[in-house]
Amino acid sequence: MSPTDAQTRRGGSGRRVQRRVHAEARVREERRQPLPPWLATRTARRALALLPVPTFALGVLAATAGGGFTTAMIGGTTALLGSYGTAALRRATRMLDSAPQTVLDEREISDRDHAYRRGFRLTLVLFAALILVAVLNSFLTQQAGLQLIGSVGWMVLIFASFFTAAMLPAAALAWHWRQPVEETDDTDG
Amino acid sequence: MTTKATGPLGVKQLHNRLAVLRAERGTTRRQLAEAVGVNVQTVGFLERGDYGPSVELALRLAAHFDLPVEAIFSLAPFPPMSAQLYPSPPSTPASAPTAPPTTPATSTPTTAPSPAGAHT
Image (tube, rainbow over all chains, first blue to last red):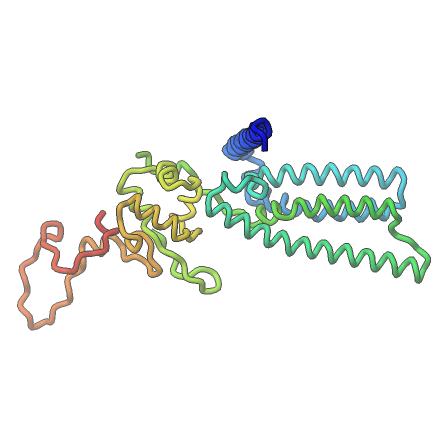
């Protein structure tokens, strides 16, 4: 390896480290921000945790809408709801599911691992639902000549499933979120 | 001091004296969290007994308070601090001569020394 190559490689690695440090600082800063009051209650967090359900349901609805403008409209709404849900859930759980490991302590890493485990189980449920839809579609096509979901519909449904699966770990976290300790209930040393 | 005896499904909970020790040293949760390298919320969860620390964190907390780990964490509930500072005198038989009353605060303790965490 020539000295120029080594220098270039060092430069590239340095830039990567710098980018990572910047990203971690940004995540730390975002996590330090207080939650807006509407996100701070347990009821709001639990309501948000249910967002993957309407997202997937809208996906199924869009897929069965027969294509065309209606599918596009409902599909767009699904994408909007999915994006909003992912962002809101991450905000409500202080980005615990997506923050780099270096900015989390052992309790947060443990909470995140639990959420991933629950998220994995929920993803399996999602796959089961997709299989069920596929079997039903195939059955109806063969028996009644009625195709519920066409090729465009499947694309929309996979897209909605992707959004739903992306939300699941954060949703599991939001559902089981433990009430944080009030900092006012502290000793002023 | 954590007071829960058992958690859900009969799982044993870890009891600790973090809140007492922190109050005794006059440190805030934030200061303790920074000293042992965890989130301030984690200190709160530890004090509430909602989270059991790793061995590493327990040792770091023990080192911070300069106490053995068993003085801070226990599988059995800690006795109340008042009971350790002012132990109730053993019940005397009716025929035994009555000892002159002594002031608890000034009397010399006759019981075995209490765990290190109780020296508050």
